[in-house]
Length: 203
Image 1 (spheres, one colour):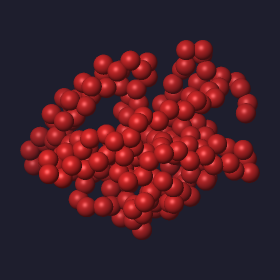
Image 2 (spheres, rainbow, N blue to C red; image 1 turned 120 degrees about the vertical axis):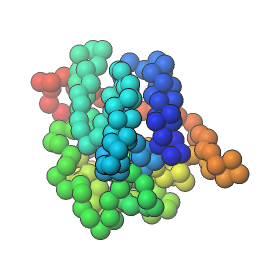
Image 3 (cartoon, rainbow, N blue to C red; image 1 turned 120 degrees about the horizontal axis):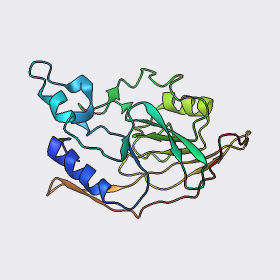
Image 4 (tube, rainbow, N blue to C red; image 1 turned 45 degrees about the vertical axis):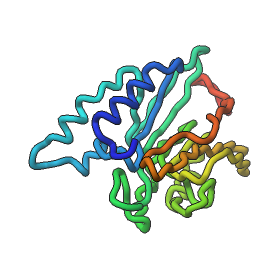
C-alpha cells in the first residue's frame, strides 16, 4: 500500500482471500492509515466508517492482540501481532522513539510474534529498529519473530539463547521505483518449519 486508502486495503484483502493458505494472519504497518483509529477524522467520522467496510472474512487481523491457531493435527500455536513502530515521518501506528510502548505487552506463552518493524540490531540496515522491542523480546521469548518494514533488510537470523529458544527474523525487500511512485516485491518468499504443540505439551 502507498497511502492506506480504502481501495488499497480492499484490494490487498481481496488478494489475500484467494490465497490457498488455510490460515492468514496480518498486521498493519505505517502505511495503514485507515486502520489507525488515532488518525480518524473526528469531525466527520468518515475514516471510522470506511474502516468498518473492510471485509476481512477468514483473514485474522491482529492489532496489539493475540490469537490461537489450531493446526490440522490438533496442535495449537499462540500468535501475537502488533502494527507499532518508531516514528519515521507522519504515518500510522507510530510512537516517539524514546517512548517504551512495549514493556509487558507480549503475553506469556506466545509462540510467534508478528510486528511491523524490527527489534534493535536485527536485519535492519537503516537503524529504524527499536531497543524497547528488543527488551520485550528477551522478556517474553517468543520462539519465532516475523517482521518487515525495512526495505533494505531481508533474510533470516537464528538466535540460540541459554534457554534454547529459537527465533527467526524475516523481512521482505521492496524496491522503490521512484519514477512510478510504486513498490514491487524483489526477494523470494521466506518459509520455515516450526514445531507446534498440543495444549498439554511441555517443551
